[in-house]
Amino acid sequence: MKFSTTGGSSRRIKAKVGSKTRPTTAKVRKAIFDTLYARFDFENSAVLDLFAGTGALGFEAASRGAKRVVFVENDFLAATAIKENILNFTRGTTEQISMQVVRRDVLKYIQDADLLGNRMDICFCDPPYDFSSWERLLSYKPATFVVAESDKEVHPTDAYEIVTIKRYGGTVVTFMRRFQSQLEQDFLSEVN
Image (cartoon, rainbow, N blue to C red; front, side):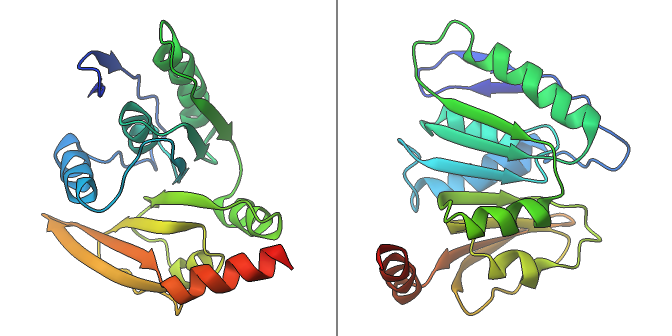
């Protein structure tokens, strides 16, 4: 896969994925970032790429200015490929980007991250299409903005509102934002 960075240069990443991994197509990835362009500023943002697979969404966010990316992937081959790609992606750059790969079950990771108060700006969720724990995942409020990729619409919990829903063939991408009152409530509970 090839990515154009904000500086105009391009970088390639390898895709070593298991049989259960369904990478986001270049067309859908471009459409996601085109939709986000008007709604989200990646500059200096913290990004969470859940069910990372190839890491394409996290790497794309980094190429657009994200300063921290956490890739969570349980598959050994995919996680190993992401680690290799981090080395290739950051080689020769003067940009300071923090990239971390966590090889762990996503729901266990997100539960622990919630307990630690580890808040992210944007979260990409691209699980296998048979994933059925959206409500549980979203209950941990993984980020201010969530992009959920599935084969059907993802219904938000009380903490989120749908910004827009886009369909690309058999892929449905649901864009969600935490309610402002929920953000304020979370901030106050962290301060106290």
